[in-house]
Length: 428
Image (tube, rainbow, N blue to C red; front, top):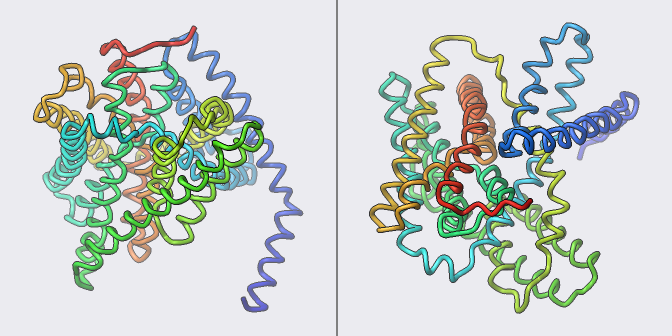
């Protein structure tokens, strides 16, 4: 590192100290903690999923809303925006534990029993959303590179909201098991689709370069396999250790070290932290010689983490950013095409696999939530389309706007599905 770079880092550190940035972040954490309690109290009274309340309050705290508050100065608004954006690591940590939770629900026995049913549902709902959104964008005269990248992002289902609703209502049954398996594997499929689609989109948009088997197929395949191997190794080693411990402190620290350590390794080797931690969770479920005894600990310390995650996700939804009728039409077409692809594809897959009637009827309703992986992919588009910033901005705005819909409708539909299927066992 050059002397100039070191000096810049020292100047930045001094600026953080003088500006008391840590205090401003502490204020924000305090506000979010208080609002989380308010959300829990209100949603229990209104009998709606807690995650809906988190996202709704997050929207009220979004930068696009706060910047219209007349009692705040320009400096205060800028500081607020800076503070909110500085919490991006919360999403990374939350998604790591969410991925672990999903992986821990995927036993070899469940996957073997689901077999063909799981394969048909995942493939058809993922590719259904991808194809319908791509075709819909082309139908309203959007360029191919934009259509295919939005289609790829549309294939992702955010597991966080779905898992949280299932846990909140203590859902158990064949629909719940199938839904957990689908949202767990869905993101691996979505990441694969995106890994293939983005190089094509970049080449089409820039008019330069060429598409090869290496950058369109081999590289993403190696990254996915590498993430699985990394996660399984980390999970195997840590679960063999954790079952030997009896003390709560040792168990909790081993679990946290495994999840965050896997995330760090994934980032270091340029792998997917999501797939890596799903593999860690899978190892905990299938390689443990006895019950690791971590379920209660995991649920307890992730409550505030998930609350912050969903509220901060809500703050990124720029509800005031609707600037034209054209944007509204595009966002609405994207949303409707994605919903049709998810529900239609999942139901068709369940039908072809001869699944139970309740799975055919309701499985698609649990796949509508989008925030998390899709937003992470939108960030990737912004980074990779650095020479065409308008593309990244448009994709990001569409994702955030449509997320305002899916993150309210999605959890409500998941609750409706498990209720109609008779799989709710809500604790009193």
